[in-house]
Each structure stands twice: as structure tokens, then as C-alpha cells.
Length: 398
Image (tube, rainbow, N blue to C red):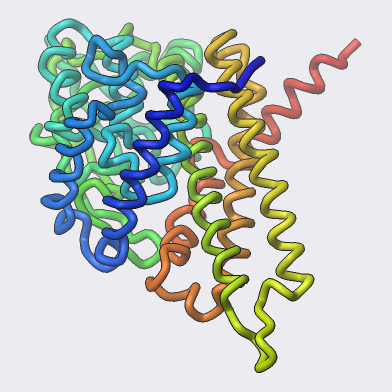
């Protein structure tokens, strides 16, 4: 196991960090105050710059127009991009499109790839992933009421989904629906492409999250499927393999999330330390940095970030070397460890900033609002801990 990176990869990371510092972070004061759709013109210009620099789509295969980086390499890129909430979108590796690209690449037909995958990778269209349901646990995708019933050469889809991220303005959704209700529980659901202009695809609303509905890419949609008819040729992979495909998608996706969260940790840590050294708290010139409690927060944060980072890099290395299935325990561990590390670091940074930290004059309040969900989506902390513990304990059974 060796986390040493090549000179070429270091150059890539240096270029990305410089771009984030000079082109994206200066946009954040405007970004936190405006709707995302109002930011799209300037963000499209930044995307064109990234493409000219040949840094577009770091996690996508080279033959599809991406950089073709390994899981470990993309993890490092994701960390660099995570320092700004604009990073992944501008570099064309944002969720849910990144995961949908993986699904289409691995399971799409030639026609699906030509019609949807190519423009999706180029950033010409957006997509969404519609799995979580309103009245059922999102952490257990085998529990699902949405159905896709065959009618001639079509599927007729009925169901109620929410937290369908970026549905507002998407070209198509990948929908998880029950197609084989009598099959074993893990073989009941399938993934089906549904164009968002299909009659019966109803975007009910953008869900208000922490007081903000969002718009365009930066939103979470509630969707009602009412007799939504699509051809059976829109099926992704084999019928009944939806759960298997979802697991393929979620494993690598959690690496991307964790490294992005570590980027948030790095940004918040830098801001916290800078503020602690600058903030005067007494007439004699003493700063927050002279207080032992603040020093403890700095020390704890530094250690927690390093531990979480090494765990995540190890999990990425394991996926690259043994595959997602054998790296399952590693991925479960980093999901809850890194999410909680980020929560702690962002909270400490906000505390050091005091009243200023509660405002949108810094990016910390944005991180605090929008990243609390990290301990819930893609499997809540409790789900990962329980499933990991069960697997570990099984190894000790006589």
C-alpha cells in the first residue's frame, strides 16, 4: 500500500487547487445569496475554462471524454474540489450525474449511451436518481412501493419519491421501481430511465431543506409518478437487478462523498486557525489562539482529519485493488467516521467565528446547513454501524 502520487498527478492537483482558489471561492459570497439558476451563466463560463485546461470529468473514462483517474486519484481530486461547494459541479463530477454516468457506462445499451451518456458526460444535460420514497426508509432500498407494470412494450410507473436531487431541470431520471413483486426481495426492483418530460412525471416541489428550497441543480425534488409510461427498452441492465446496480453505484460514490467532506474539513480548519490567530479578545493583544480550549479544538480537528483522510484513502485503494464488494467494511466505516469528523470540524470553526460564523459572510454557515445531511443520506450512521458490526461479529461465530 503506497499513497505516493506521480508528478503528473501532483501537477493536476496543484492546477485544481489554484483554480478553486482563484476562480470559485471568490464566487461564493454571491452563490450563498442567489438561486443556483441565477449563477448558471457564470458557472458555465468556468466549466468552459476547465474543459480548456483538460481537467473535465476526472472520474470518467478517457474514452468517454474524462480524465480516467483511478478511485484513489479521483479521491484526491474530490478533496481539492470539496473546499468549495461549486467545485464538483464546475469540474463535471457532481452527484447524482457522476453515479448515473457509471450506471449508464456499465449497464446502458448502445442507444442509451449515444442518446444520454455522451451529452451527460459533456455537461450538456443533467440527470437525477429517483430511489428514496416518502413513507419508507431511504436506507433500505428493498422497501419500495413504486411499481413498473408491463403493458405491451411499455412500463407504466406509479409511485411517490422524494429527495430526488437535481430533478429541477434534469433531462431524465433513473427510477428504482418494483418490476418483479413475486421474486426474492433483492431481485424485485429494476432501474428504468424516465425522461422528465414524460406525461405522468410530476415534479411536485423542491423540498425546503434547512429553510431553503433551492433551484435547478441545487435542489431536492418530490416527484409523483402517475401512470408514467415509458418503453421497456428504457430498462437499465437486467430486470430485477436494480438493488445490485444500486450497490455498485453507492460504494464508489461514498468514496467521492467522503473525500469531498474532507475538502470541507480542510477549508473549515484553515478558516478556524486563521480566525483564532487574528481575533483579538483582550486589550493586551491576546487572541483566541492563546486559549487552551481553542488549542484543544485545533489539535482534535487536526488529528481527526488526518485519521479520517487515511481511512478514506485506504478504502479507495482497496476498491482499486480488490473491488467494491471486498472493500464493503472499509466503505461502511468511512461513511460514518468522515461524516462525523466533518460535523465536528465545521461546528468548531463556527464556534471560533462566533456571531460571524452564523452569517453568510463566511462559507461556514453554508457548510453547517447543507452538510448536516451527510450523516443521513447514502445510509444513515446507525445503518452502517449496525451492518458493519453484524459482519464483524459473524467472523467470530463458532
